Image 1 (tube, rainbow, N blue to C red):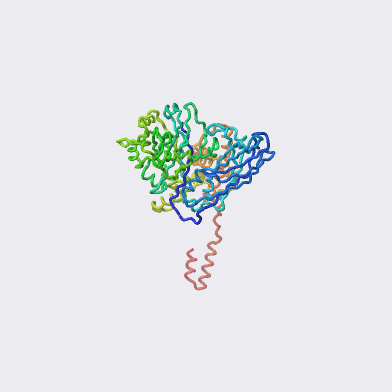
Image 2: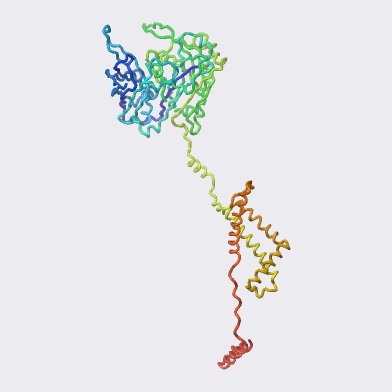
Amino acid sequence: QLIFPHLKMANQEDTDKKQRSSETITISVVRGRNLRSTKNETLTSTVKIEFGHNIIGESSKIEGKPDCTVDYNYNASWSCSLLDPLAIDDLIYKPVVVTVTEVLSRERKQKEERNILLGQTCIDLLPLLKGEERFTVRQPLFPPNIHGDGHTDTLANLPQIEVEISTAEPLYTESEIAGCNMFSFRVESAYAVPEIWHQSNLAYHYVTATPIPVSQDKEIIATIANGNLKSAMEREGPGAQRKWASAVNITNHSSYIINSFKTKIAQHRVWPIEIMKVLPQAQTKTRKGAHEDELVIHYHGVAYVDFAPLLYPGAQRLRGAYLVQPFSEHEMQEKVQHRSVAEEASQFVSGLNRSVTSAIGKKPKKTTQSTINKQSDGTLIDGEGSGAEAQAYLENKTFVMIEICLDKPLVPKRPPSSLAKRVSEYIPPRSIFPTRVRSAKKTLETYHKQVAHVAKLVLNEYRLLNKGILRNHYMPQDTEIVDERRKELLYELNTSGKYFAFKEQMKHAIVKVVREKFLITKPFEDKDKLNTFLSELYSYLIDEMHVGLGKALSMKDDAPPPVTVIDCNMMKHFAIEAEENRNYELAARYYQE
């Protein structure tokens, strides 16, 4: 396996003019905890702060306390240019290295004091680029005698250092941060590498490189050259930590990280990730007398990553396994119309140990003609026998795990409100749909109507049965007569079958009440629950029956017609009186009546 680090780069297409050309970044080492001397005496130590290849500052000797704490209170600062894109990239992918060194007291025979490295830690400066002015971290100090691949079970027992990073003002305003995007490129591991790799004792550099577009006509080369070769039996544990891509003067565990690009993708969906082995050769003299390292590239392969999913609305992450195949210049020109970046990657490796070049952005030197040659068909030959070597990728089916992350999606995902607004523009307005009456209320209305209908049928039967007694639609109010007529009505309804006919008419309305009002759609399994429900249903139906009868019938007694008090003698008297008053027409009418 090849374990590669994590690399981040800033991508900002708009180069707006900034009011400030630089900003001072201050690193304050506050205190150290759990720091113990290697000689069982009072600890005397110094703290050194480095960034990239530069030493920012180193404190004087400070004695520790009996509780294994050391108050350093040491400040160091440097000025960072805000106009140089490479300086901003340095803040993203280069950590601040804090080194604590113990100063041993000089013995009699020693002429100078002896120093012992106690531990190192790396601090990520990414929060400064996200708008923070001040943040504090408390991280473990990794001693140089811990070995492994980034996993440790003794973090709680390690010494700790507390560091505060601050600036006078935020490096970028909120509007500038909103116009930027951060591109994270991570090559995790390459699996099923050729077996011959494990049989060589030469000190190879395992390198991966890819061009990263930052604008329409500009790109930078991202090179990661600190891959580690693992044996076939050694497995990668879950949650393996990531390494810093620019790990200069960093030892062991401290090298691990603690917790217009869009247009280019639209033009070329796939993007090349080149993988190779670089072997430094002996130095050779040039005509001017200078010494240069000749580099030979072996096993030059390429994996083509499809970046098109990053153009999906809201997409911010792309991760997958990609097959490594032998490099072909002709094939790369056809797929991505781009040249190989192996030359730039080899130049980066040549300056890796001499701390000459940066991980990205530096203009490479030209390699010698013997380093990289081409065949007549355009296939790149990286040293002797490279064409046959690269075929091993296909024979072993080598694949590499690659992850691409963006701080913001290239195509923002539209909110549902905006989508609904756009859809409404294409749909013509329609009339408001009438509000539906609730089904339970409608069911009760149907039940009331059915009760009124059956009540009228029963009333008609009662009238037919007692038509000889009823006089002028009036029934005598004697209690005995009323009870007797009621019994006769019930007897008539039961013997004629009309009672069961009326009950069948009510059944449909009652079933709808059970389903819509009581929401009962399945039979009861418990008999007690069934009896309780029937009792509740009977009470409810009786109450609603009274409501329905109250709407259909008037419960007040009709008043009997008034008895007239005028007779023939009175009419004759009125006629004589009208005649005496010489109202002959009125008198004639009275006589007629």
